[in-house]
Image (cartoon, rainbow, N blue to C red; front, side):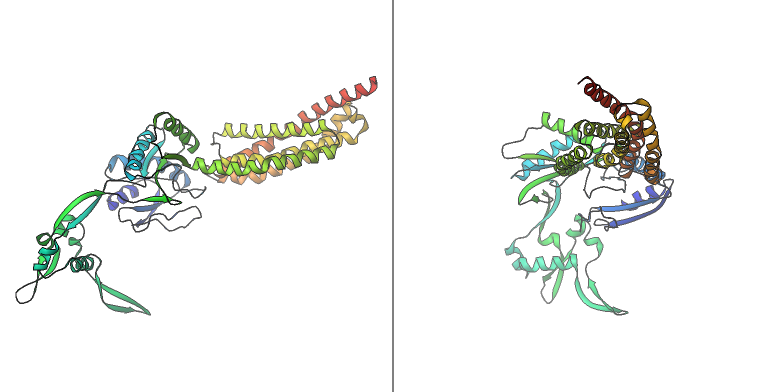
Length: 450
């Protein structure tokens, strides 16, 4: 099956190289790659390299649809190799409970609901009750007539499957063991196992008999695996998304379906994990320190200008700069995530710098401090060189991320920072002096009347 899929992938335009690892996860060649599938003969992982980034982006969705249609007997997930936290799947649902049959049934219901969410391509469960298991039923009394015991039969079958070391070969300075075992034809299917030779006692010497002659073989469904978290059984359902589908939107849609249509038995609970959960945890940690930083910033501004109104102007500029940064993100069409929100936090410090310079210049001029329009304009224009140079250098430093980065990790951060800082020029040179002039005129008028 792998060879067929490999030929289909290599026939696509733009494919440069295809590297496969059969029976386990690919090595962790990057920080967010997880090796969670070891010694699994039914699993294979491929890394596809393309000529250009655009070819890779186009191939993700195309290969997902074409391979699903061409090979329905296997489950294929095509994902982009990109930045982000080390998570196994963008959308995950964890169901906790004691009974495996109930967990399996609930997992099937969740997968059915996932199929109704636009953008979800495939889903898998960690607990499955349908894995085929070959059971060998042997009677100890019947085996005794053949000169065998149950333990001897088990040992012989272990040797037939895994082999036995019969010597070694010296290659350079390394000693390589030589393992002897039965031919592959006896180990790949039920028919071969039926014909597997087993030594039995004969009249004069040991003779060989097929396994089916001394045992009874049955193929039965069994539990594939039992997953636990902190000692508690759970069924982890993982879903994968088509290119361009935000994990937050898919998770929110799935949450609505789970709340309205999934009924959990007593003693069972459900948790929505994946990319959305990781982002919520990151935002929670960010929100923990935000009030402390906000209080320190407001206190510093009040002590600097000795005016609550001026500190309020700076706070308003900070809020507007965040709005302009998110407006830039909306114009670009990039998804909202943790990185843009983190960029907003960094944007505030740069965006309010120009307004602080303008307010300090106005306060240093007695006429401007009294609300004189001409003096305020002169002081604002004298600060324009500093503000524009700071803005241009900041936006210029973000140009490489804007032009040469792909995906949904760095570009949203760069767009928020560049857009917010760029638009902050309007706030610094137009909005701030206008508001400050209004405050100062009102304050000077009250002093004159008094």
